[in-house]
Amino acid sequence: MENIKGILVSIVAPMDNHIANGGEKLLGNASSIKRRNDGKVYISGQMQRHVLFSALDRINLTDSGKENTYVSNGDGISNAIEVDLRADMGGFMHPSAGSYSGRRTAPLSVTPAVAKKASEITRDLLVRLKVNEIDGSREQALATKEMSDSDLMIMNFFLDITTLSITKIFRYKGEFHVNTEYIKHVNEKERKRRVKLFLEATRSMTDFANQARNAVSGEPQKVLIVFDSKLSRKASRYFEAEQKEKSNLIAELDERESIYFIGDDTAGEKSVNAAYKDAFTTLEKSILFDPCNGDDNIKKFNEIVFK
Image (cartoon, rainbow, N blue to C red; front, side, top):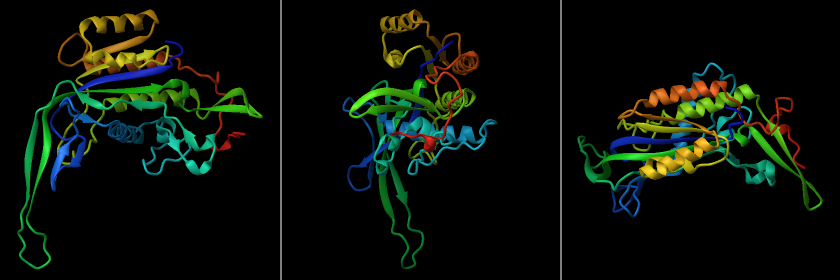
């Protein structure tokens, strides 16, 4: 496929006995799970981004094309788009810069993960026993924690290829915007490698809140991967839609000659693993949209003159 402008990954992931994103403590030591007014538990978009970048960091660490790239910690994001994958895909905000050079809109966006149906909540009792009678030892304590019994969580991830590893600069004459320039920070080979890391990370989601001892996974049971010729997230409705809407969504993708892959580990002809495998094979033969038209104008972010 030529000129891929957007990649959407929509996932259904089963989670059992989980508190993948805890809420506020309601009363004293009563820890609650986040849930909507309709009773469905959810995982916030912020947590989804954290888990995705955590997975991306692990994958990049062992990738043969890593070179000097890294994923910065969320509390210290640099502006080195050419090497910092979080700065590139996750964006940054540096108010002290006082200009366009101080902020970057994230090419990577996510939705909160939401249960398909209203959730059944269990409250677990936790006990800390006092086993040491010496002075200064911690007292016995009781706490309760909510967890959801069993959910099918729907989550979506979108990567804007038109801005991946690229900075958009507005040129002004006086008070008037007279030109727009695009500066690339890495070559096309590296851009495609970053897309592969993104795709792999979407099926490697494990680092949710409160899961250090509870092995809850957000890895997909069902997946829809779309290589799109336009910037559209409409297909993110697919796993919530009735059959008629699903058919219309697929027909719309077919009409604009987008390529999509559907995998289901519970039914159908293609598994989740097979869908990802086909997506990686197609990506290798595809061309990403490039507003810079080649690798002739590659610069580090701090080499750009914004005025």
